Every structure is written in C-alpha cells, then in structure tokens.
Length: 190
Image (tube, rainbow, N blue to C red):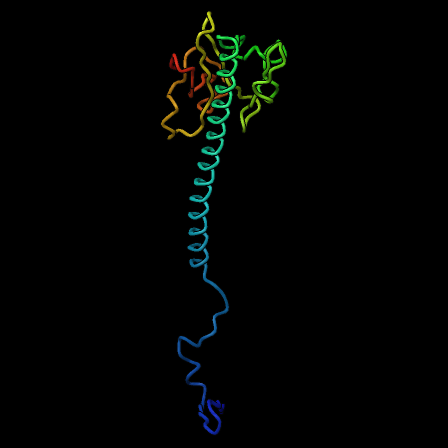
C-alpha cells in the first residue's frame, strides 16, 4: 500500500496495483516499425521542402549579386563615357580599359591611360568562376550592351533561350553559353 501526502495531516491511501493496469499507466518498451517509418517519412518531407527553399534562396542571392555587378559596371562605363564622349572598346566580350588591355572578369582595375580609375575591381560571377559576363559596343562606341547569366528560372528579368551572339561561358540551362540577362546604355536595349 502506498500513501501520498497532499497537505499536512491529510493522506490518500491507494491499495493494490489496479490503477497501474490502465492503458495510460502501462510502460512501453519501444516504438513499433510503423511508427518509426511514419516519423522518418515526415522528416524526409520536411527536409525536401527545406532543401528546395534553401536552393532557391541561394539562386536568388547569386542573381541579385550578378544584377548588382552589371549595374556597377554600367555605372563605370557611363563615367568613362562622360570623360571621353564614347564607351570603352570591346574585344571578345571583354572591356578594353584595364591598363590598356582587356579587363579580366574578377580582375582590374578598370581605368584609362590617364590613370583615372572607374572601377577598382571588375566583378566576376559570384558562384562560378568559369561563367563570365559579356560586353559589346557599337562600332562608333555610341552604345554598349552588357550581359550575364541568371539562374533562377522564375526571375522575370531572365529571357528564355538567351541573347544571340553572346557568350557567358556556361549558363545554367543545359550548359548553354548564351547569356539570359542583359542591360545596356540608355540609348539602346539589350
């Protein structure tokens, strides 16, 4: 017999093991196979949703960085235009204003022969060092077009199929080389 003291002077007497034989007080030794499978399935569903969301957010972050990089290059090219009345020449998709030669993506600085620095480091793709941007300019250097590759397929700025004549090395869709995002000087369109 057990005695439980609730308050000073009061006691409750419970006799026999009958109260322990009810379902709520039975001791379980482990989980059944069905219970374990259900729990693992729930974890798998949660993990799949989390990984998909994480991947999409990474792509959006990289794409935001690419758009920002191209906007910075555009600003540097506009400053060059303000100084010379024309945009920097191009060769092979690269800007020809880095120490008198072609600017390497991720290298720099973008400058002119007088030593004016328009951009300290010409940006590169934030994710893939093999993926490049692509720069083209009119023959009279009166306009330019600048291209990159956006990964997120739901991004409205991304065009399907890519821009003809561009080469971003490796773009995300089926290892295509055509760039799928473009900006330009204000007097033309990509």
